Amino acid sequence: MIKTYHRNILFAEGNAKLEDSEFAILGVPYDRSSSFRTGQRTGPNAIRESSWNFEPYMFEHSIDLRSIGIHDMGNIDECGDAESMIDAVEKDVRTLLCRGIFPILLGGEHSITIGGIRGVTRPSGLPPEAKEKVFGRREIPPDENIGAVVIDAHFDLRDSYLDDRYSHACVTRRITELLGCENVVVVGVRSMSEEEHHHASESGVSFISSYDVKKDGIDLCLKKVTNIIKPEKLYLSIDLDGVDPGFAPGVSTPEPFGLTPDDVKRIINLLGDRIIAADVVELTPPFDPSGITSALAARIVREIIAVAHLHRRKTGAHGSSQPIKPE
Image (cartoon, rainbow, N blue to C red; front, side):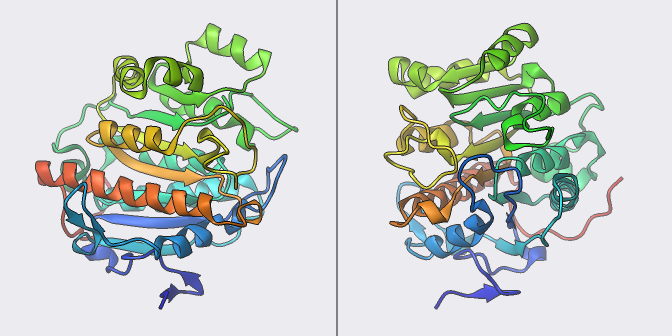
């Protein structure tokens, strides 16, 4: 039986109490800036439903997800505009991080990432106990920040789209304003406007195209990523349209010639020791009648949990989380 919470479907294995959890899942059913296909607001529960298809034991990691504290917070309340949605996501993500909990957002469109990034900035302001769980150390310089790796078919570097600065087409631009252009890399890009290309060249925003990945291999491309991004810890944002539509057709803006699911799995595994928060966005269930995109999304979430847990266990940063007052 699929368990529910506050009329939301629970993510499989996501029934631990928050105070006993290492990971927390939060759904953000928002799609108000969609410009092509719509329906991303139904994505979080579609991912949850698909999560029940998988074995809890992940043999390649020798770990059973039932042994990990995972709490599903359900979905945020419906928001009337982007700014209120972003504020709500920021608040929840920050609260989780202050407990030393790893947040995973389920979209919803890509604009939810702005709230996620806001929630993990200014890590020096976290309580010492949270710093130790998230960073493995209790002292963080005031100027220390995080980096972001974004998997996306589109650059999303516009300053505004359809008179909306918080459109899904402006996500990377808003992220660079929060973290600095030098701390953001987009992987899997194969679509951008001339304006975006010029802005990237002038500002120093880095990207690795899907063509680079096919030519050089994902491992070599990720070496470039680690050479570019200097912050120790990363936020990972996975727009499912970064994956080729042959594998993930149920997205809002499909773009051919994309990454493979194996590429995404490799990215998670190679960057796993640096990731402190993540999101999976742009699932559009009305255009996923076979359910293969929602299945991929759910499996990606499970991969993030397994890999991040193994790295946190090495540093002693896993385990239960008690409420901590922010500094």
